[in-house]
Length: 462
Ligand SMILES: Cc1cc2nc3c(=O)[nH]c(=O)nc-3n(C[C@H](O)[C@H](O)[C@H](O)COP(=O)(O)OP(=O)(O)OC[C@H]3O[C@@H](n4cnc5c(N)ncnc54)[C@H](O)[C@@H]3O)c2cc1C
Picture (cartoon, rainbow, N blue to C red):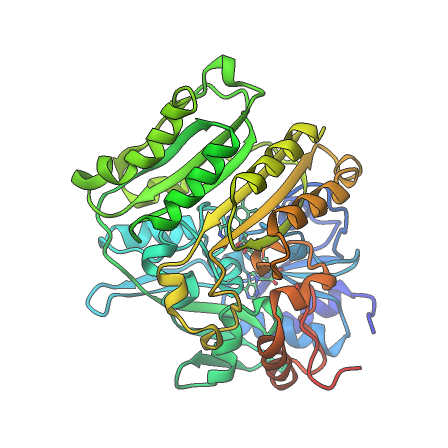
């Protein structure tokens, strides 16, 4: 059941603890806009609390009034503004504190902190926690889905560094989830997405990394280079992790003009094994470029890890993507990728490949709600256009390419199911993982208040 929202009743229920913005208020559009464009589900109100008590009041109000509730922090997913017009958006960006405990090597972030703000705070103490490739992504959002990034092969996923979380569950209670307290909730939060409550605080273990050698290495796109890059990364020491983008080269100043519009392999890499050993570690990747006629651009350089999270935001575009896992990307699969990218007319299209293994695979599958520990490669196919109508033309293409690259391997990575497509639920959470999540959902959100996500239904739900 979904009812109509009364702004005056909402304001009264929040006792002035949170800012409430409705379509009549200045700042409303900026408050509900999210990063990927093209979604037109405008909410009825945006609530911006500054503490867990404010979050709890908003959660109780939504539950009592049967409102569609959407939770947003970094704003990178279309779900952060609700699936349907008329939702109540709970925008937790005001929970923006970061506390670093150098002695305990832990850091605690409010539920609205971005990966960039968190990393800026911990870097001052010579510490980091691994997130993804973009500093603008919300710490809560990426953690709840799992978190793969530039240090995954060395330090594991973001969830592997999560020590505990404070969560407002559907009954409006603020709970601590950790290995000791509510361990079923703690298990579910590590991969199960925003299904179990609003996270108001996350405490992470931190790591010393020092200077890394990283940045993009851009190679000519041939089946041999694409497959060679994947094979090289699979054999590399854990200190090397890369995010590989097979894509049409954009007209950017750091690429030579003759490369613009051509298919390239952009290897966004991070070597954390020491500056002195970087050249030797990266030699096999550079050799692949030389063999293919020459490296197009080599922007790999030593620097602080945080520098890898700082990229310019591209223009706002409507994007459609499909996540996949693969056992390998051999030359035949690489040729398929290049054919597909060459034949698409999408303004922006990319096949992104991330080689996992290493510390990601050290953790047993059942230890967290991330179910794909054994998958050596995860990836995403994406198409983007200026409008949602234009990107709709490419939906079949995206699904078809993902199916061709996965070559029968089941699975989807929850963080890249950004539209919450329910047909992908069992791919993200197969077997036991799905069953345990449904049980946790029945315990902590039996009425499915938190459903603007890749939605897990409570066990026993028809
Ligand atoms: C440009 C870009 C780069 C990315 N790179 C990576 C990457 O390198 N690695 C990776 O693993 N993923 C990556 N992602 C995916 C990203 O991790 C997910 O889309 C994630 O959900 C975004 O979180 P957010 O807080 O920014 O987004 P939001 O839209 O604010 O939130 C997304 C969802 O997370 C949940 N949520 C967010 N905050 C809370 C909270 N405080 N409490 C409860 N639920 C909450 C809600 O269900 C919400 O709908 C990337 C996405 C983009 C757009």
